[in-house]
Length: 135
Length: 237
Image 1 (tube, rainbow over the protein chains, first blue to last red):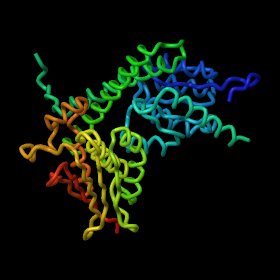
Image 2: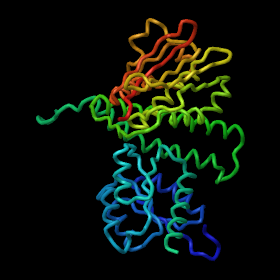
Image 3: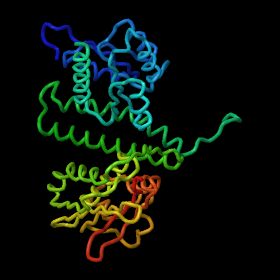
C-alpha cells in the first residue's frame, strides 16, 4: 500500500482515550502510515478541515462534539465529504451502527470485538477502495 | 447529606452505565495484549506467550460478561432492541455448525442437522437468533458426557411456526433445577465444575430474544441421557 516513493497516507484518529491513541499511533505508524490525532470532536472536525487526512478513525462518545455530529458535519462539507470514515466505538447497539452507516461512515467497528491487526487491515481496505474510486 | 432533589438511580441503570464504562478499559487491555502477542516489539518466549494468551482469553471473558450485563439491563428496562427482518433459520444454523466444526471435532462431538429441504423464512433479528443458537450448541458441546458426544439439530415447520430443536447426549439438567434454567445467573452445579467461565446469563437472554420475536423456548431432559432445547419462531408471511 505505502510504496517507498509514495507519500504515506495520513490517518486521523479522533479518540479521547490516551491509551487507545497511543497503541493505534504505534501500530499504524509501524504499518507505514502518518498518524495524527484529536482528543475531542471539535478538535477532530477542525483537523479534518485543516489536515485533509486520507482516512478518519472516529470514536462516537467524545467530549465537546460527539462522533455522530462530527460525521454529519464532515459529510455536509464538500471539501471533506469524500474522506472515508471508519467508526471505532464501544457502542454496540444495532441502532448505533445503522445510524453511523446512514450518516455516511464506511465501516462500523466495535472496539472490544476487533483486533488491532483487523483495524489496520480495514484501514488498508478502505484506502484502497478510495484510491480506486478516484481513479 | 444528599440534595433534596436526589433520586436514587435504578440498579439496572447503574449496571448499564458501569458496564458501558468497563468497555473502555477492556478494549485497551485487549489491544495492548494483542500488540505484545504480535511480537512487534520483540520475540516472546513460550511461557510469556502462554500467559499473555491466558490474559487475553480472560479479557474476552470479561467482555462477554459486560455484554451480557448490558443485555440484561436492557431487557429489564424493556429497551432491548430487535432489528427484525426475514431470513433463513436453516442458513444461519448451517453457518454456525460450520463455524463450530473444528471445536466440536476437537471435543469429540458430532453435530448433525436434519431439516426439510424447503423451509419457509422466519422473521426476527438474525444476529440475535444467531446468538441464541450459538449459545445452545456451545452448551451442548461444553457440557457433554465423557465419550463420543452427539448433537442432533432439527428445524421443521409446525403450524405457523418454525420449530428448532437441539438434542444432545450430555450431562443433562437436574430435575430440581427445572424452574431455574432460564433465570439470571442460573448454573447447574456440574456445569460450574466443567466450565467455570460461564456467566449464567446466556439462557436468560435467549428466552428474552425468542419471546420478543413472538416464539417460545423450553427444554426437556431426554429419557436416556442429555437434554433437548426447543424454540419456535414465527414464519414470515
